[in-house]
Length: 142
Image 1: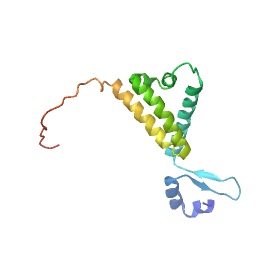
Image 2: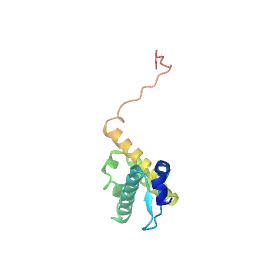
Image 3: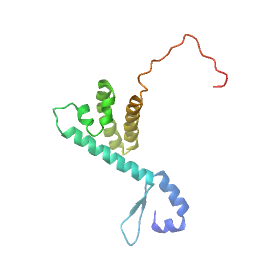
Image 4: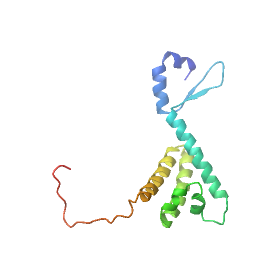
């Protein structure tokens, strides 16, 4: 987009920028990128996760990766040991895939899903016994 398009067709330019980042070229300066605040916040969150992953991979290599990841993400210790190990493996795989495709949102969703699981465990949702019935329960207005 030209900067003149921004002043002449602001509504259309803003709509396009909501779909994906938009480069705006200017005659009197460097090109700018127009994007949403949400996307900008997501980019910052992804960079934070990447920094934590790099730190965890490079520090104290005597500890297993899931223990190193529990340093920046202490909620990880609420998960079972098997889930901690699965988290470490999956988060690295998802990060690599997301970064290679330049689709960081997938990494944010994966991290939030694991965190949500830890929050549910902390709230006691993992301790209740599941009641299995032999016949369906009929309700009047589901």
